[in-house]
Image 1 (cartoon, rainbow, N blue to C red):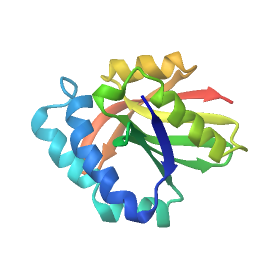
Image 2 (cartoon, rainbow, N blue to C red):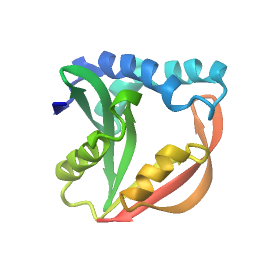
Image 3 (spheres, rainbow, N blue to C red):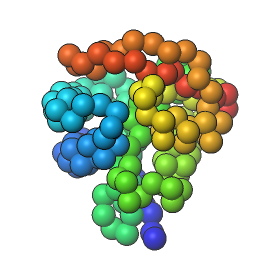
Image 4 (cartoon, rainbow, N blue to C red):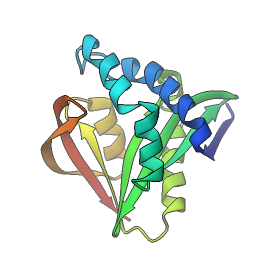
Length: 161
């Protein structure tokens, strides 16, 4: 298995969107109602929203390829000393092979002055929570969040760097 991680450009955002359409139904099966997943992806991953992430909100994106195929993505931005891991998603077939860890290491290298890494994760996403805990994250708070028109509950997880 050969993994390649590279910085995404604005031209790569349709690839991020296409991966989200594949990954979200895999990732959120049994967590979110199936009829809600597609509409959420279309709102959260609208190309205008992704472009604004980069051009207006200071987010940076990276793509992961495994054996030459798009396998996942990560995005992050920094607020003060806190680095926010905004999105980290991998196709099912790539999980458990070190790609998630490699994506985390990529954002850490890109933001070397961060002193803390934090993220939001759906409180019902036990596999993701377990992965983040294995990487040294702890739950800081449980909060209500709104993604587009969709409300749900997330944990804020953090770890010092």
